Image (cartoon, rainbow, N blue to C red; front, side):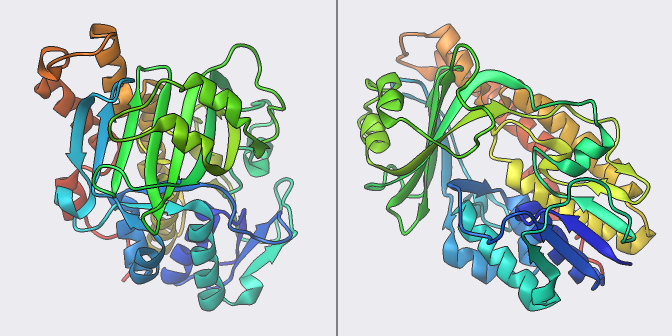
Length: 388
């Protein structure tokens, strides 16, 4: 089977590796960029995605460039703890959770594709602008602005914006909490996220808040952030354990993005065309699931093609799961605990148990893990998607 992949991002590269591992050798990626560079900021890979990359033989390479997340903690806008839970191996998973620079992960996958499928397998400066029929299968892995998706759904239009703006940056700073902590602080509308992504001192951060009117240059997804504007919105967020305005001010690079997603689709496959990753189910960056879900798509698609000869089983499994996740993220997913704490105690609290009881907080966290597919027991016991 000849397979063409549109897009050389994380989803497209993971798909190529998964297809090769499942026995497909005639695979070519078409990437619009002339050169694939390590662009972007930090992302998270949850244990279900790390499992798949491990089964693709990339565990050691991944460990060499990533930080294993020890805990995830939620706080209010005053830095008071609302919820904390261990992550990765510390939470009983058989695989770690990692924080990593998106560009370094992309280059890791790119190197593996070229090693296993050959240098010819990735063609840069080659943009797919619509459906093409010189292969047995076209995989649309070309992101939230997917041309392949647009060809299948020409009337869809631009991704809808929810009125929030994200500023994302990286700063070299002293470690906080455990040194491997991922923290979120906020009140349900304004939020700050931070976690280390390299050598213990490179901190990735995300600042989020509503913005009236349309964001400037909405089509520019690499618009440099005005740090003075960002700091002004978080000037009093100085906690005993983290100086938020100081972290923002010290950024090496920072970018502004509108918070957008895509509406769930009625189908992902039509004839010899199939969608994966953000092209299929772009979602709000809630719960750290975007890149992880693309990796899962890649593995399930390869398994489906190798075992049944079609993508039907892939869509049957993945589309309902990611639709539920897209909708959960629109409801703030596990981050809803910050909104609940703010609504019930806007000025802070002395005892979180009196504000959001433990049972309620625990069920919010557990429910999201089930929805996103990384409940520890279910993940540890699930059969492999490797093709034997």
